[in-house]
Amino acid sequence: MELWRGDLPDFIAAANGPRLAADMARVFKQIYRRSPASSEYSSWEQSLAATARVADEAVTDDIGVLVEYHLPLTERRIDVMLFGKRQDGVANSLLIELKRWDDVSLEDEHALNVLTGDTEHVHPSQQALDYAGFLADSHSEYSGGELRVQPCSYCHELELDAGDPLIDRRFADLLARSPVFLAGQETELSALLNQEVGHGAGVEFMERARSGSFCPSKKIVDQLEEVLRADDEWHLLDEQRKAYNAIWAELQRLRRGRKRSAVLVRGGPGTGKSVIAVQLLAEALRNEVTAVHSTGGKAFTTVMQGRFKGARPVFVWNRSLRNARPMELDLLLADEAHRIRETSDSRFTPARERNRRSQIDEMLDAAKVSVFFLDEHQYMRPDEIGSTRLVRDATARRGIPLREYDLSTQFRCNGSKTYIEWVDYLLGFRAEEPEGWYGDYVLDAATTPEDLDLLMDAAAGSGESARLVAGFCWKWSEPGRGGVLVEDVVIGPWRRPWNRKEQKNKTYRPDNHPYTLWATTSEGEEQVGCIYSAQGFEFDRVGVIWGHDLVWRQGRWVGDKKASKDPGLRRATPDQATELLKHAYRVLLTRGMKGTRLLCLDPETSQHIAAELERARERAMVTV
Image 1 (cartoon, helix red, strand yellow):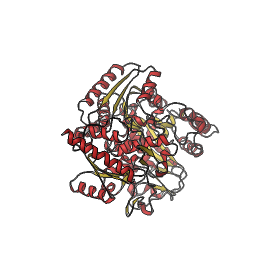
Image 2 (cartoon, one colour):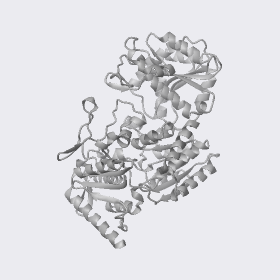
Image 3 (cartoon, one colour):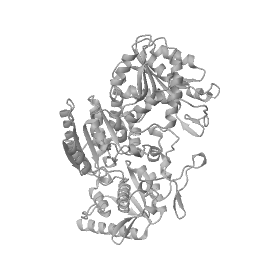
């Protein structure tokens, strides 16, 4: 999918005329259901004209051109791709990342990202190389076909002297694979163009690329299998295996045809929904079945991309599926399906263009078999609507058969199913008080925040993983000078920062994303994670700070939006806020594999929880 395509003479004529950007904007609106930003429109006008001047020196007209080519199942687009033969006859493409920068700098001798003004960017040649790697790993004409790709970048407004930071010696290896061209180096870029794609058959190869589909490479399969073999947590047991077998059988029934099917797998925290999803993903790719794992949460998607390094293209966000071709996938594994949104619209979507299509319809359209793994009590925002009813209604409306499975065996919280049931009872998700769990799992009460520090110290001394988490009751400040975190979480003299915040002007790999660093490195031991950081992670021990946003009053739970700093609650009604906050504390109370220590800041709420804990202890004694 692209905003413009044609042969080289057509591209040169269009780029030098008045209509190219306007025609691209029209196609953009048809595809994305919104208008492009004015800055993007201006970039098309200037950058494509500069590229056309370089391409005008090509030795042949038989070069295919794609402009703003959308990478399959992502939200990323390649600026320009040129297609043709190399001199040795190899089918090839030249991928060009275009930048209108007029200044660039490096923060210090260690920086690998570059600065334009105060904004941090990946080196444009690294961006091009990453896009090329994505094609090689996940596009059928590159991962399994004969097409090759040569990446490069072109900063057509950056003068040679100003562009010195981009050719610093630290980038020598990168530039050998993906060169950068600055203003005044058009002759060199033209020479690369002729070398890589200047020997004919370009339109033919362009059409092959356009007709290609999402097709992960063997390298991705190998990476998934390596992690799954090495880590016992990904093994299937009992109900997990039953659901896995049923889904695999359903896929075999349908993959050769043009019919759709759906499967719903319900389960609480720790019942192995993600284990089933990842095992199915690996098995599908191993058998050359096109499949992806999708989620609605950035933290969880980032975790999966970081954990399965090298397999990033098969872990996507739900909203990336809005542009998938009908049944482009054989299998869609929608993990955390409770986080499905009403639509895939973003804050940039104009009001008049919103709500054109539901997100679940986009997901059902994307695959022959769509599998939804959900927990009815884990959605976190008012626009998250994933539920059994949603899946049933959407599939029934479209005449798609639906199979349903439930998971109950507990693989988290020391395997204590009754502890999870007690948490649900405590928060009002379950009417019946469960049998005694006290003794199966350790939940103890802290009286001061220093008690949480003792938990962290004891875990460190035992070689166990541990983290502090809290309700979103304190502001989350931007880092100070030098990236120093602000100690926002304050309880009397005790102070801690939230985990490092994602910066809008910075690009992250999954392994250096703040969520990953908080959960997997020692840096996180001195920080507090909020619900959006903690969801999807688990640790041996967890210290939970229960703030004033959810309190027990007159025999019921009451959410207090004024006590919350969560921007996701701004539009919530009082009842919605109460329900969402109950979901949040349910997640925080179930992150610990071996134990949880709870500090409750509201006295009345603390007394209520202490009374329920005592009742649980007494029931356990009776049971024994």
